[in-house]
Image (tube, rainbow, N blue to C red):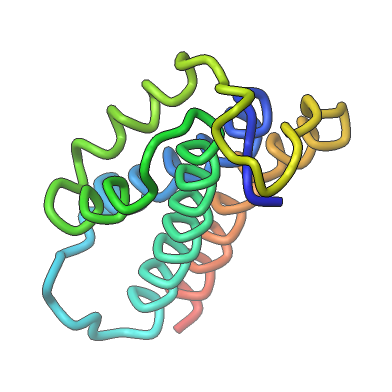
Length: 138
């Protein structure tokens, strides 16, 4: 699927972006510093995976509204904190049915997709708890 409508983006992309930002800022991970321990590397891998999934959701949503995906990618390189604001704006902008002629407009999110989105909200924090437990054991 090359496009996400509003409901799919809110269910899948937004939780991943929010969790990635919370991991980076909440755990005070140092940007540019090589992670020293196994646990800190685990936090970074978790945040990077969530951020990558959220970025692909933003790109698919940008395709749905007719915007350029390249602008979003450059935004991640030069203004990462601003991208959270753009991620919230993408929730409000209506879809453009003629935006992408490669495939039809996506179907609205189903209950199964919303449950998956709820799992994406909770699952990373279970991984953080597991890493914290592992840190206490080591």
